Length: 178
Image 1 (cartoon, one colour):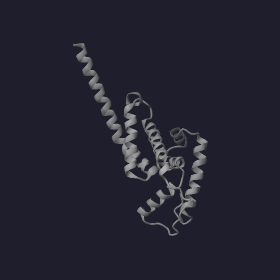
Image 2: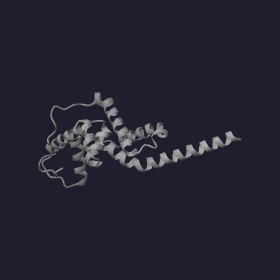
Image 3: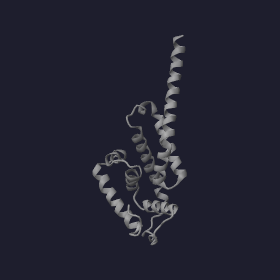
Image 4: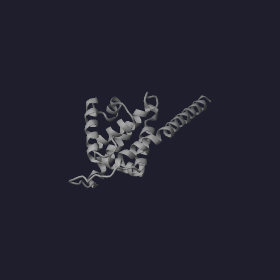
């Protein structure tokens, strides 16, 4: 009889863990998917990367669920998935000797602005893209970005400044100041 009670208690605990994970996924998925999209510019790949993040987290949920900052942990897992994906596809990419000319006209259309910003972001190396996305889109502190990417605070500050300068150069002087 004690074994039956123990089994029922274990099932209730497992159900509670699953409900807790489901709630975490429902609240975190849109943000992670958006961050993944900003990194890869492909909604389908962004969805795959988000699912990979959740699968890895689910496998360790019993250990990490009491982690103080699950949002930061999920960002770290996502960035690792993005970097792993980039390593796998890097052999298939074509590198251009020169960047295409920037559009001289001022952009007023929101969709066109969005596309232009994503193209400019794509000119940055992957780690620099991660720094800009986490720092400015996700509004993370320099320390949080450094922790997420596993680099020093000075690396984040330096690469962020260089990346913003490069983006300004690519976008042109008539573009909105970032």
